[in-house]
Image (tube, rainbow, N blue to C red):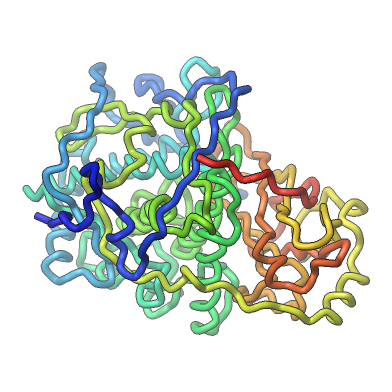
Length: 533
């Protein structure tokens, strides 16, 4: 059993600050107050007996899919069991041969379960399909889909999903200490598909992957297409710094926008979901398949065992952001809105019992009985170098039209515009891309740069890179969704000599092919004052 006696405070609680190697005294959080005007209710669990046909839509065809689970009338309100030992999720690249053997055996046994067993491999894969591709409607809300992506439900849903998946695997091999591995794509040593997943004889293998991106190819979190692996690694570390630290003002910026009963799906993804998460899905998905199956489309993503390893690292990002990042850099880490905390899902547990769970019970991974192997975070201080080449910036500004004269625009090519600052000087400001309308059936990715002096769009490791908007293809009630994103400019203003400028030049670079996204407007606003907890 793991000894945490050195990490327990005077109240008997685990002090996470002392548990991450090389990071001390970094814990800090402030509450995000609930919205007093919110009149809706939390998203409720789906009614399994009303599960319908899921739909995969792309620009070639419509494909109806049956991914409904077995139906039972008995639902148990799940209570987290006492934590008697801590399951430690290992880095997939550092996993021992003994662990790989055990993991392969567990997946093999899951695949051999009867087809109608809710713990069967395809039944587990179908969970993602049903929740993400329109099989479930919001109870009592007509034909409004339940969608667990592109909102504040993204992290909690996937945490519960992996929690039960992990417990099922442990049950199948008689090892309650078994923990899923995480694909450590945020560390250079882990930026290839883990070796255990590329053996054709292994139960972890999936042939529907991009054959150009098998090891030793370095995962391209920016989807820039750069052929220089050193540049790709530098881009990846910059992206991680940006989405984990630099670009977020509040919990909503990281977690995603509120999603309540009666809301349309896809209100808006947080920085991590629309960044590294989406890029890995797209990078692994097979371009030989009509809809980028398996990992490149939500309906099929769970059919690749690598999906769960990828999302274990996504879950790790949430844990790191919650507990280990400096409070002076990421001050606002909690959502206390009851419509978030009381949102609920249903899953089948390791005993094939249907259970109801809530968001409030998954906010602490260690209370759920699992933790992560400690790995260095090379992106933690990977702040891009300052950029001060004023002559080129002024020239770029003179050539770019004012944003108000050209928006709305369809982004099928690079767009460069001038945007007025909200305030001169070292202002705390946010760049807002508003009324973003996307075709949900397509892979979409757009990168955002400010006063980019060299126009080399494949290099992201510079102060000019602000962030991204991206989505994985999926189905919603309609084939379009509308949202907005905001990107924090505080660090960027510090790193660029533009305090006295009246405008900045924003460059929007689409990484996807063709259209599929229209942006209604772009503006800069003053950031709201910090809240204290």
